[in-house]
Length: 183
Image (cartoon, rainbow, N blue to C red; front, top):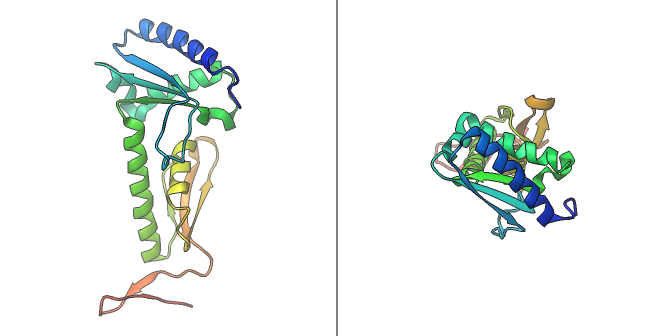
C-alpha cells in the first residue's frame, strides 16, 4: 500500500489546502474522502484519497485545462512524497470535471478508432497527462484490430492509435456492406 497512514495523509492534505486556499482567497469548499466508493466500471482510477471541490470559485480551479486543480494535486503528491507510479492513489476533482473529462476522452478514443479503421493511417492525439493517456488506452483495449501506444518525452507524451499489423481499413461497397480488404 503506497499510503500507509491514509488518515494521517488526509489530515496533511487538509492542513496544506487550508493555508493555500486562505492565502489565495478562493471561496471553495472541499471534501476529503479516504477509500472512496467508486463504480465498478471505473477501472481507470482507484484513488485511496479523493478530494472534491465545490463553491463559488471552484470553476477557477478548472480554467486553463484544470491547471490549478492539477497543480494542487501535484503539490499534495509531492508533500506526501508519492512516487510517480503512486500518483493515482490521490485524486482531485472539482464540480464533476473528472467524470466529464473521462467521458469526453472515451468518446474521442472511439472517434479516433473509427478514423483509423476508415483510413488505415495512425492517429496521434495531442499531448496529455498520464492519467488521460491511460483512459485512452483502456477505452480501446478491447479493440482487436487496433493498438495504442504512448509516444514522446516528458510534457509531449501523447497516444497514437494505429491498426494492428495485418489489419486493413474497412471499405464500403455500393450495397452498404462493410468489406475488409486484405492485401
